[in-house]
Amino acid sequence: MIFNLLFLTFSLLSFYLGSPPVMAQDMNSENYILQGGNFNIAGGNKSSSGYRLIDLVGQTSAQVFSSKGYLIQSGFNNRAAGSSLIFSISPLGVNFPGLVPNLPQTRDLLITVKSGNFPGFAVYLAEDKQLSSETNAVIPDTVCNAAKDAPCNKDSAGLWNLSDSYGFGYQLEGKKIPEDFKKPGFFRPFASLNKNELASLIMETAEQNSEQNARMILKINVSRTQPVGIYSNNLNFTALPGI
Image 1 (cartoon, rainbow, N blue to C red):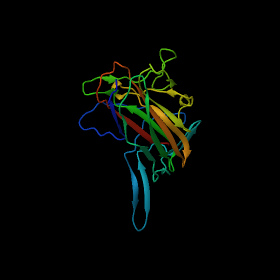
Image 2 (cartoon, one colour):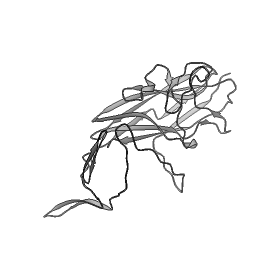
Image 3 (cartoon, helix red, strand yellow):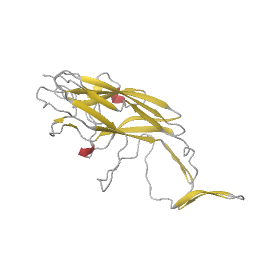
Image 4 (cartoon, rainbow, N blue to C red):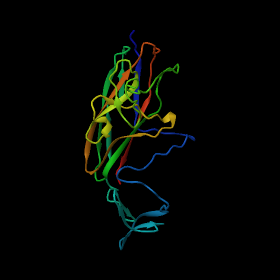
């Protein structure tokens, strides 16, 4: 049985109108944890022919705070304020035509990130939902070789090479990717926003003026009982500059 089954689209930015559900994402890594209890109420650049003033109103303490793993320049001009974080993905859409049961297909995405003057970056990934058709049939996210080995999850890759292990998942190749992807044939399922799951970290560095590439291998494998249809979802990438 041959399926003309799947079309995927990828969303880099999502815009919401009205009152959507509110979700939060942990702002921490090996290099930093954000904790805050004070907000500036005003700030900016003021000048005339006789003076130039840069101010922050509401800052309770202006100094450099440091500890193992982080440095905060509180109350000072941010040297990265004029810098740009450059993020790109190619291609922006992927098609898996003519799927055959028990015969996995793969497609590649190239992710490129340039940190500029920022001290590094972090990239997070989540899908909006599992691959779904108009009749609400679903292609599940992979659990890798769960019948034989420990199952993979959104934050821990596992070996996926059995022809009767079904689903949709991804693998990464590159220098600044999580360690669990560095074993051949190891994949993860996607974090899913409609399950209220937090996005997964897929790239990270603390290096300034760093340009990094990662190859993402998308893999899909379907069973003979998978309903025929056109399945789609969106992958949401979030790129954050280092601080």
